Image (spheres, chains in turn brown, orange):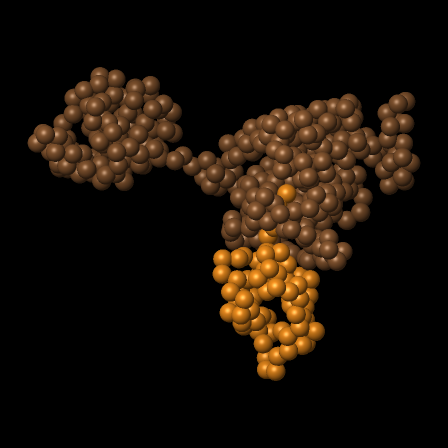
Length: 356
Length: 79
């Protein structure tokens, strides 16, 4: 069979065999980031016959990428990295099913995306996304193959492997200041070497051979070829639930607007001004399309409001209206804004209006 | 005598990848880190600390022994 021929040189390894090849063919790997690390990882996973590969990257190819992102051709500048990488794999090994994901990986899509794969590879270039990937891996119970670079040094580890230690166990302080390649500079071979270590960990995990870099971080220096392994332990405080994940990454941002900007909408019948103060609070505000529902009753009386109407919510000083905003958003109101400074700011402005 | 290894952005601050330090009296890991911070002004840099190839919790109170190797490992971000 041609498949056997294609993979013959690895099948004849006693550690792999037909059985190992079958394991590769039935595994789904998501590679996040098709930059320097991804460009090293992707062709090797594809050539080895990993069954399905997802490539998540929302960037387009730039000329300054080509020195290290060796899978891209010069005439692909300006094109989507995820799509170009997919095309590269299709030529390299048509047996691999590939999905290009050009959407940015975020708190909104990470969990549903990770659920479709067995192994998540972190080939990204900033710290914030590494914490997000780590947390989403914890929620979905997937191993995370981590790699990163600082100039001529690289780090590799596998987090959350069989419930093992995580990125947060190694780096509990979420300091987002570390430099990426664009800022620090990097030689193509350095990301190549570290990406290759990551691909190796992926294959070992799938095949069940060797010792996975779980609970260990490998630090490699390309200038002197020194490598060190450091052990670290799982910390109980670094677990994260699905609820905590949603709270951390998908907390809605309250949209505030200054009353001055909505003055011209005061007589507009399509707009509703919602006062969430208690009835005895002053100053009183009287606007044409106004309704008063104190915050504590808002959830019970939410039926009184039209979800499709534009709602400006206000309170005394702009604090309770933010809570009301979140409540309305939870109930899927489409167009809500909180008035900054609340009734106090509004009254001030209304007085000035009258004077003019 | 102990050895301290520096990696990544930490090594850029120290301008060396390792150094040997001698100490006369008892030296705790916390005191060593405090001294290094004063000497090199790590400021906003974060790093994990390993003693003899094992990452130790930040708050750990450990009395350094002769021949211990301490490593300062900042997170890397490039890719």
